[in-house]
Image (cartoon, rainbow, N blue to C red; front, side):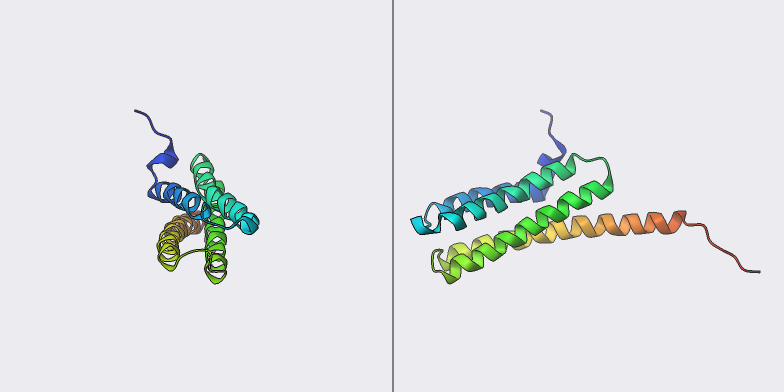
Length: 134
């Protein structure tokens, strides 16, 4: 069986796991919090979609950009988790599990963007001509 590049990434698999987790969480949100549930679901989905889109890019700069967008969506989800906890619409145990998974996702995305940045900087440094003064 053939796979897309993003399907091989641990961060993508974790992001999909988070989407499923969010779907279960928002089923318990009260009616008056539909706006929060909708935002949570869209932000969670955005993580995995940006990872998939980024992994399909050939340009390292574009990959990096999509992974940064995914990371921003993950931190948005972290904010929604805090709001949900403060509004007492999510149990502490579920909050902690979701938060732990988000931290893992953000950590992986940070490493992916940092490694790509360092590689680009090293490549730029290597290809720069040096000026010699005599």
